[in-house]
Amino acid sequence: MKGVRCLRLVLATVLVVGSLAAFVHLMQGGSAAAATCTPSVGPSIAPPASVPSGIPGFHATWYGQSGYPTLCPGQISRAVVAYYNSGSLGWAVAPNTAAYLGTWNPEPGQDQPSVIGGNGTHGSPNTRWTEYNRPATLPVIGRYGTYVGPGQVAWFQFTVIAPSIPGTYRLSIRPLIEGAQWMEDYGVYWQITVVPGDPAQRVTVESVDMPADAFTAGGVTYRFDPNDQFDYGDWLISYDQFKFILSAGDVVDVNYEPMTSAMSHFNIVADVGFAPPTVTWRVGNYDGPAVTIKNDVRVDFAEPASQRGQFYAVERAPVPAGTTTCTITSGPYANPTGSNQGGGSAAQPFIDYDVPSGTYCYRAGAHNQTASATAFAYTTPLSMPSPPEPVSHQPTSLDARVSSSASGSASTFDDSDVIKIAFDEAMRSPCPAGTSIRLRDGDGTVADVSGDCGTTTAVQTLGGTTYQPAYVLVITIRGTPTLITPGSIPGLQLPATVVAQGGITDEDAYPWDLTGSTDLVLGDPD
Image 1 (cartoon, rainbow, N blue to C red):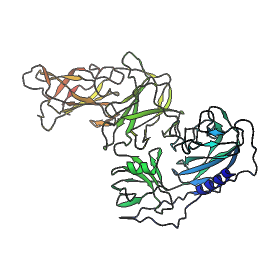
Image 2: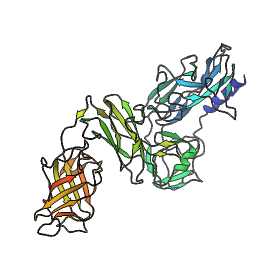
Image 3: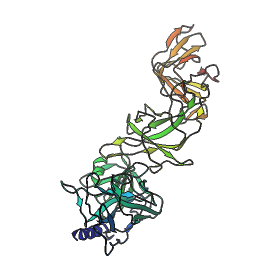
Image 4: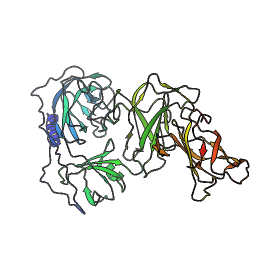
């Protein structure tokens, strides 16, 4: 039984836990505190004394597995489960003969995603499974792949990760021939116990010494090796990928073990150039005035200082009503079918059109090809009511102010002056090309001003009142006001009253209602 001897050797190898008496990393500059949570692995589970064989067709008999691990939050472990081919047909890496392990009942359920492993889709963490519901398949060995004939043993290997909340988690598994049939259910499961651990220490990389496998942060040197765990946001990455990606300025969460025999955990949470943005949402009507309900979602991105103009992929997941926090395991994230954009940028918000009633989470991130991973940022949950809210009214201005530029006159409207107008609802941003405001001053001068026009994704305070994101429109004047009617004094003087406008609308495409507005005077004083 050559396969059985190999299996036992593999199981023994996987179960090795290094002694804490091993050599200590040489530290330079300072000492990194060691994590106090220590993982462990229980004894392997031996195969049965006898197994059936030669059953016509595809059949499998459980044949032992490595021990169940105890892990700290966020740590990973390699699982090995063996199956004996008790049928008359071989298993191969080929259509209708490929053997897989699939998720099964009772936890998480047949073909359902798990919280302890997956491929990063359908709400599963990314531990590099074959699919979100296929922990493992036969490994490809050599040019001709893998063949497990009748009477031989195959071992399936997959990686699991400890959730952040301590407790006991199970993964029920069952072998199958993909596209053909499920094989015998022996009630096999994988179990991990998560114990409380020290929270990760968040550090900013100051310098990287690649030949020494080390980086410094806060005057402390952290060393890493292939036995450590490396993540890129929600994605498991390799030692080689970590080395290639890591650079000064990156933000890394560290659970550090200075002894070479122990496993440290390094998670790049903000990669310079690919850091996740701050993501916010608003519900409105972005179809235009012909539509009378608010059933679209706008997603805005506030970029980190380390990057500008990055494209962010956007995904949406349906979640249960009452959900309070959006995370990777909140639901099956996918690009919304209501939009063909795929994502957006700080200058171009993402619009998800005609969103059905329900509760949703959104996430966005810039994909790093080197890491083959995306570090996502998550929104707060949003609820689309049933029926959607109707489009209500035209926006009115509540407070209008102007700040003179340092280079211009304090008494006239000049290039680089900044106009801020607070409205009673969210305004469309950026303003369309050609947007302008027509002003009339006290001596009869009438002129049009235009320039950079839009709102921000942060709250704004104007005149001592705090307004929600997108409620304050900011116009930075570019160039000299365009004279329409000259007055008795040259130039457009402060204060001036808004008498007309073009291009300024709310998010439902309703134009600014000047007649019903409370404040239309700029520089009254401000």
